[in-house]
Length: 289
Image (cartoon, rainbow, N blue to C red; front, side, top):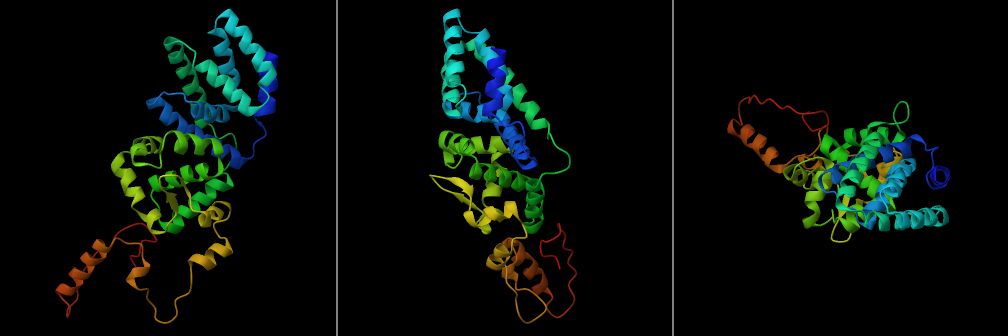
C-alpha cells in the first residue's frame, strides 16, 4: 500500500512546483484551514479542494481511511485506489465516498489529521525569498493604497480566478459570492463581518476590481494581468492618463470618501479670507499633498 501511495502522489501531485505555485498553495491552505476549523464539513467540492491542497500529504489520509475501514471495505478501497487512484477526478470521487462512510468518532480524528496537514502547508513557504505573485500583490497594495485585509481579499480572488477547485468550493458550494455566504467569506479571510463590508464597499469596489454577483466571485478580467506584471503597459494606458494644464489634481481624481472631502472643505470655508490650520494625516498615496 505504501508503494501505491507513493506512486499516486508522484503522478497526481507535482512535487517540483515553482515559487508562484507554492505561494498559491500556501495561501489556499490558509483559507481552507480557517474554514474547516470552524465549519468541518466534507462535501465533494471540499474533498476536491482538500486533495489538491494536501498533495503528497494525501498519502496520510489514505492510510487513515484504510486503518478505520472494515476488512471488506479496506480491501475494496485498496483495489479501487490501485485501479483509479492515478486520475485526479477519480481519486477525489473515491476519497469522498470513503470519507462519507466514516463513523462520527473517526471523522473527528480525520478532522485533526486534515487540519494538521493544512497547517504544515500553510506555515511553510518551501522557497527562499518571495514569489513573483507576492511581489506583484505588494505592488498592487502600494498602487491603490489597499489595507492588509484588502490585500488578503485580492489574493483570495486571484486564487478563485485561476483555480477550478477553489472556484467550485468557495463559490459553487459555499456561496461566498452571495449574501448568505458572507459569513463563510469573512471566516476564510480571517476577519469579522464589519471588516468584510468595509472591503466590499471600499477601494476595490471603486476601481471595479472585483466581479461579485449571484453567479460568480472573481477578479475582473482587465485586472488579472496585474498579478503577472503590475507595470504592464496596456494596463497603464487603459487606467491612467496625463492631465494637461495646472499643477494640481481635481478632488474627484482621488479615491477619498466624499464625506471626508466635504469636512475639509467646510473647515476651509469657515475662514475664507484668513489662514486656516489643518493637519492631514494618513499613509502615502492617499492625497494629503
